[in-house]
Image 1: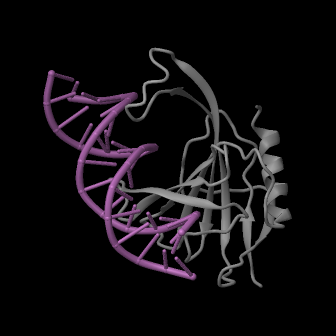
Image 2 (image 1 turned 135 degrees about the vertical axis):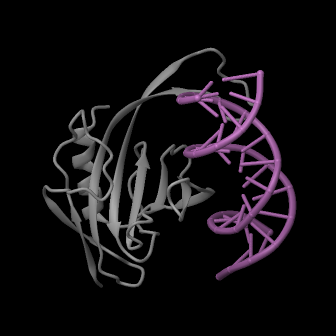
Length: 165
DNA sequence: CGTTTTTGACCTGCGC
DNA sequence: GCGCAGGTCAAAAACG
């Protein structure tokens, strides 16, 4: 089973610009890739918590006029891999795919299939480097990992330490 | 047969 | 207000 390397960035700075493909430095970790056993390098970028006003997406009018503001922690994984589906131990259901303007590759939207788990994730492939896959996680899992991916949980724990919630 | 993927439509925020 | 860009829904197909 091969492993792919993950480069950790420094703790999120408030002025962290989303420079994809930029120099990421910091600690490192190793992940196991279960699929084809492809070796890949992964850089992690922590996006600072964003204030997102909650609004009803569809016609379901539950919350009207209420400007609920949540601090959503988002962090992006930058993986150098040929496969864009990285098994991180969770089960994801794809619920959308959209092509973004500057990228020739479409962006996929996934959601954790666990009951009541609001974690979303979007996978985007960098058009500049075809081998680079940007996986942006949003939210935090309220349940433990099904699989025994200890490394990943360890890293998640570290990131949760960074983002106050 | 149950679950996931696919895919176009729909909704929303933002800039002009 | 309108149009664009991005995010989500939902129905049907595909998959095991």
